[in-house]
Each structure stands twice: as structure tokens, then as C-alpha cells.
Length: 359
Ligand SMILES: Cc1cc2nc3c(=O)[nH]c(=O)nc-3n(C[C@H](O)[C@H](O)[C@H](O)COP(=O)(O)OP(=O)(O)OC[C@H]3O[C@@H](n4cnc5c(N)ncnc54)[C@H](O)[C@@H]3O)c2cc1C
Image 1 (cartoon, rainbow, N blue to C red):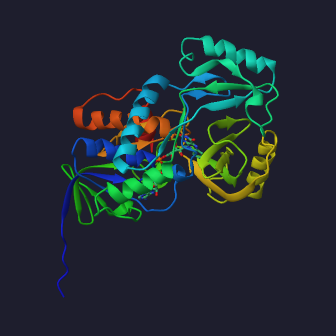
Image 2: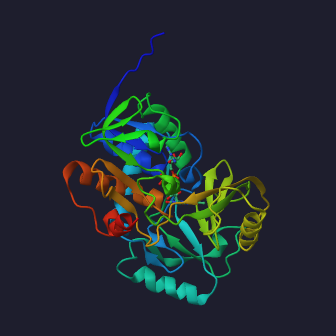
Image 3: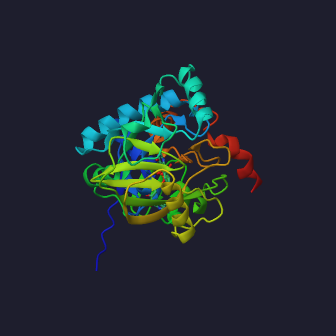
């Protein structure tokens, strides 16, 4: 019997297809670089995420690190992606932060007049009477430049209609990757370079397991609430975000010790308790899920080149802001790899190089 071994040549192998892998694929597609994706179709953190784009940290009322650059790039990027996949995945939606007392109202008002935040926050208080069914005795503060991306639909449609059909829907076997000086070979695929976008699973990647990826588990509920408005993302002690057809995303827990994707009754009870504090309408629980966020010890992304192999790269550590940050991070990485543009120091994995050589 003759076994056919057809060698496939591409510029880049992308490993992982959550929001980070998708964004990197899009950088390559736009620049007409050939690529192949290796990733199982199973759910990842990106599928579970609310997909909220929020340039602010609502607890402390601060802007996110480099908020303006990330936000402007992401908004254009997702609008273009929506056109590409021909599906409604981008939903501009305000966030209504529920105030607990007058001090919070005052802090908001000061922040909304400050230079870094006035472009994102509405100075005018939004009165609680606007919506029935939400408990907000001290009214709301509005984040105006926020949105929700339907990650699940985006990933599914992009996979089905954009990525090359030869792409592999299994986990990569890291041991089977051959790294040569001028090419990478994985089974019958030969490439100039490989970019790993495996989210928290990267802790098992032999090339990058030296990096301080902490990981934090998040549990969420999806509920059906027929009488709640769908034009606003509410932020009380947790988020309550519309998903369409009267379904809402409720979350999330933040747990650093348990690194499994098992749902827990403790997580569910906590979410229900927090929800009860502000939702007064009847609802039905449809789903309960959990995933791990790829969070990093210093809360900055992990981008760059492997300390030893010049053709092995990483796009990871997007933490709690993957949807907001991945578009621009993927462009930074592309420019670093293809155009020799330096990465911002705070995001470059060079900052952890000592750990690699110590191991
Ligand atoms: C509960 C929760 C709520 C969140 N809400 C938000 C939000 O509202 N807004 C926001 O911006 N972010 C949010 N996040 C964070 C966001 O989900 C992450 O930042 C982002 O999804 C991470 O994307 P990623 O592509 O790096 O990783 P992932 O989404 O985890 O994707 C990793 C990919 O790698 C693949 N993979 C893993 N191992 C292998 C292997 N060996 N071979 C091949 N493929 C492999 C996986 O199958 C998957 O395709 C939330 C996260 C959680 C858990």
C-alpha cells in the first residue's frame, strides 16, 4: 500500500483559536500571508467570555492600560470583522454602573471630568427610574464607548468561512514539533514560523511554561429574563449583559486556586446572591459554565519571541481584557515579527528571560 505524504508549506502555523489566535489570523489574512490553524473546536475562555469591550476599570474608576490605543484599534477591527464574516457580532452598548452610595456618585462625577476619563464616562447621572426591575437607589454612571462582541459567533463564523480548510481541529502534540534554524515542521506542515495562542493551556507548552501565567477561573450563568431591557450592560457587584433573545450573561467569579473548568455549587450560589442584590425580575437559569482566564503575574500581556528559537512566538496573557486588547496586540506582534518593530517593553516576554535561563 502506498501512503501519500503531501507536504503543505505555509508562512505561519497558529496554535490555538480563541480570540487571540483569531486576531493573529486576521493580521496574516489582511497582509496576504499564508497560514494554518491547529486548535480543537472545543470551548475556550473566549467562547465563555461576555465579550465586553470596556476601556475603564469600574471598581477604581481608572482607564485601562493604554486604553485609547486599544479601544480605537479594537472598534475598527471588529467592525471590519463583522463585514468579513457577514454576521452581526459587534454590538455597541453602554455600561450602567450601579452606585451603592453618594460617595461613589461623587467619585464618578470627579472621574468623568478628568482628562483620561471624560471621553468614556457620561458626567450626567442616569436616574434609576429609567428602568424597571433593577435595584439602583443611588442611580447609575454611564460608560459610553463600550460594546459587546459575540465571540462565540465570531469564532465559529471565522473558522467556517475564513481559515484555510486544511486547518487541523486537534490539539498540537508539542513533542512532534521539529524546530530547525530556517523552518518549523509539524507532521506534514512546513512553516517559516509558529505562533502559540493557547491561552491558559500554555502552562503545558514546553517552550513557554517558564512564563508566570497565573490563571484565574471564572464561573458564569446564562439566564433568560423576558421582562428585562436589552439595550444596556448593567454592572452591579457583577455584570448582567444582554446576549439577544432575552438571554443574559451573568458573571463572573474570580478564583485563583482552582484551575479546573468544573462548575461548582459554591460559584453558582455566589453568582445568584450577587444577582439578587440588583435584579428584581423573574428569570430562569439556562446554563452554568466555567473557564480559566490567562492572567499574568504583572497583569501585562505576554508577547514575543522564544529566548532560544528565533522562529517560535507567543501571543498570550490577555487576562480579563482579551477582546479589547487582542486586536492591537496582534498587530504589535505582526510588526515585531515581520517588520522588526520593537514591542512595548511592558508586553514583551523578554522581561521574563531570566526565568528561562534559570530553569
Ligand atoms: C468568565 C470569563 C469572563 C470573561 N469576560 C471577558 C469580557 O467580558 N471581555 C474580555 O475582553 N475578556 C473577558 N474574559 C477574558 C477572555 O476570555 C480572555 O482574555 C480571552 O478569551 C483569552 O483568549 P485566548 O485566545 O488567549 O485564549 P482562549 O480563549 O483560552 O483560547 C485558547 C485556544 O487554544 C487552544 N489550545 C489550547 N491548547 C492547545 C494545544 N495544545 N493545541 C492546539 N490548541 C490548543 C484552545 O482550544 C483554544 O482554541 C473573560 C474570561 C472569563 C473566563
